[in-house]
Image 1 (cartoon, rainbow, N blue to C red):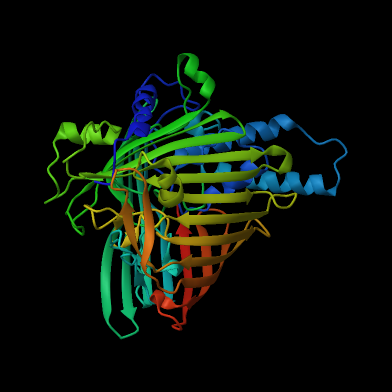
Image 2 (cartoon, helix red, strand yellow):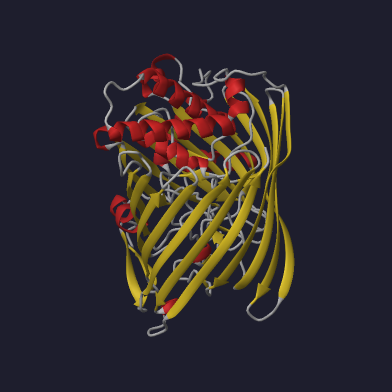
Length: 560
C-alpha cells in the first residue's frame, strides 16, 4: 500500500490527552444550538475583529454556537465601553463610533437571550426556551450550468461533480433549470445541559427538459448535551475546518452536513498547569456515518482537530481525517480502527490499505498595525510518506490568503485574496474509490484535485440594512492522465504524464445583495444574487467553450 507508517500522526495522541484534562473555559458553559455557517452573523464577527473589539476568536473550527457568539459579543461590548468617549473627535472618529455602536446594538438585540444567560445583559434567565419557528425562508433559483464529474487521472476516481456556481451551499441540490425552495428553523433549549435544532428543506425542481419533482430534505437535525468544558452533539450538522471563508481543504460547507457524533468544547478553553501558556484552545473529535451512496456503503469518517492561540496575533491548527470501514470493505477490528486513527500501524507489509488518511496544519497571523489584516495558510497532505520530497511536491495541498476585514475606516468594506492548489492525489484512494466526497460533492475544497485557483472577494455594507458581496475567480484544472513510478529499491516516487489533455479554465463573477427590510422582529431579509461563468475546454475537450448562469432571489422572515 502507498500509505506508510504514520509517525507524524502520533502527536495527536498527546493532544487528545491534553484536551480531555480539566479545562477552565473563557465563558460559562451551557448548551445552545449552533449557528449555521451561512448565517450573516459570521460577517459581523469579522467586522468586530477588524475593529479590534474581538480577540479570543478561533477561526479554524466552525460553526460556532449561539452561546459562543454571545461570548464574543459580550467581550466586544465590554471593550467598546471601556474605551470611553473620544476627546475632541473628528468626523471620521464620530462615524466609526456611530457605526460600531449600531452594530453592537443589533447584535445585542439578536442574541439577548444568550447574553442574559451569560450574565452580560439584564433580564430573567430562562430554564426552558422554545422557538417553534425561528425563521421561514422561501427562494427561487435558476441555474443554467452543466456539471461534470471529477475525472479519474490514473491515480483513482472520485465520485463527485464540479459545479462552482452552486458550490459551498451545504450540499443543497440544484437542477439544471428552476427551483422553488422553502426552509424553516426550529430550536429548543432545556436547562443548561440540553438543546435541539432542526432545519428542514422542501424544494420543487423543474429541469430544462420539463421534468418536475419534489424533494424533502433534512438539512440539519441534532441534539446537544453540554456540561462544563464539554459538549456532545448527535445528529446531522456541518463542520468547517480551516481559515478560509468557507472552511478549508479538509472540511468545508461544500457537501451536505455530516451524520455524526461529535465531542468538542463550545468555547475556547485554557489548559491546566504549564499548558495554560499555549493560550485559548478549541478541539473537535467526531465519527460520522457516510451513508449508502459509496463504494463501501456506510463507511465511517473520523476526525480530530485542535486549534490554539498562544498569542493574540497568531492561531495554529492541527487536523486529521481518517476514512475506513463500511459494508464489504477490508476487515477492521475495533482495536485496529482505534490504532489507525492515532497512527499506530506497526508493520504494514502484506496488510491491506484499510484506511484513507488526510492530515495537516493551518495558520493565521493578525497584523494589528494594519487594521487587523490577517494572513492565513493551510497545508494538508494526502497520506504521509517517508519520502518527504514526494510529500511536499506531489501530495501537498495549499490554501493561502490575505483578509482585510477593515478596508475603510468604518470597517464597512472588506477584501479577501486567496490562492488554492489541489494535489493530483487529493481526495483519492486506491481502496476507498468513492473518494473524499459525500452525495456527489467534495466535502473539502470544491476546486478539487490537480487544479489551481485564484479568488477575490469584496464586501461592502453601505448601511446596517444593505450588504453587498462581489466574488471573482479564476480556476485551472488539469486533465492529464498520470502514472506513479516507484523506485525498485523502495525509495523515491515520481509522477509522469501518460496521456496529456487540454487544461480546463473557468472564469466567473458572482454578485449578491442582502437587504434588511425590517430591522426589528419579525425581521424581513431579502436576497438577490447573479452569477456568470465562462468555461474554456469544458471537460478537457479543446475548443469546447461554454457559459454558465445563476440567478437567485429569496425572502427570509426571522420570527424569534
